[in-house]
Amino acid sequence: MSEWVQGRIVERIDWNDKLFSLKVDADVQPFVAGQFTKLALEQGGERVQRAYSFVNPPDAEHLEFLAVAVDEGKLSPRLQDLGVGDNIMVSPRPSGFLTLDEVPAGRELWMFATGTAVGPFLSILQSDDCWDRYETFILVYAVRYAEDLAYLEQIQALAKARPEQFRFVPIVSRETHEGALQGRIPQLLASEAIQKAAGLPIAPARSQTLVCGNPEMIRDTLAVLEGMGLRKNLRRTPGQITMEKYW
Image 1 (cartoon, one colour):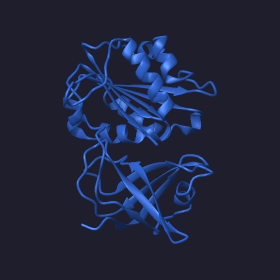
Image 2 (image 1 turned 90 degrees about the vertical axis):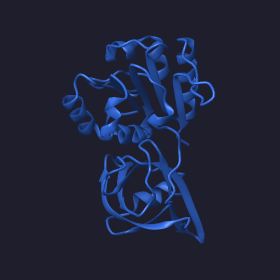
Image 3 (image 1 turned 135 degrees about the horizontal axis):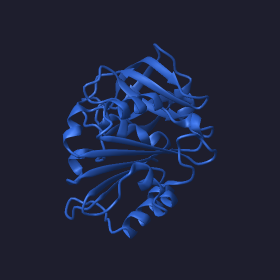
Image 4 (image 1 turned 90 degrees about the horizontal axis):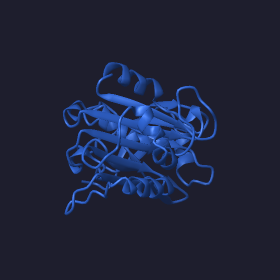
């Protein structure tokens, strides 16, 4: 199979002036919820590519990606300029191990995300077969401003549809927002504010955690979780913390 296939934008969603989603029609290999692929555009004779997680579940008609336009970025501002009918190159080979197949059993699955790193968790939560794996799923979704909470209506609809099995803890760090905690994930974990909001404890005997986002958040959250007795999940030594850096 070719290294790249041509995709076509079939829909875009603008969450705010920098945050957006693209739905793409492209022929790629089957993927597992939680995985990512690469998007690319040609500019100045160079093929600029970056990794983006699938937001859609594997059985969706179109691929969906959540992105934020970074002023100094080489690709994201170009992606933001794309509209319906425009072409984009997509790698047909999915990658990544932030999937439920890589996570040991437990009672609760905690998903900690910052910004656009919520994407792979949305893919997992839209997959029907995920709900038999754990008793409860908790999505902890942290952003700087309330307007950065993409897919909020979809997440709230999921919480309403599965009130016994899904809990949502939004976090906004730079402003107060009704219904959201204020601060950073590591500090709110250490103070147990997140656990209180979710109504559940975090403990090695019952909890599995997925952590996806910027390297600083992952580093600090790892330290807090390890202080609670959890350890990294490795294939040779299964644990309770599975991580993926989002750049």
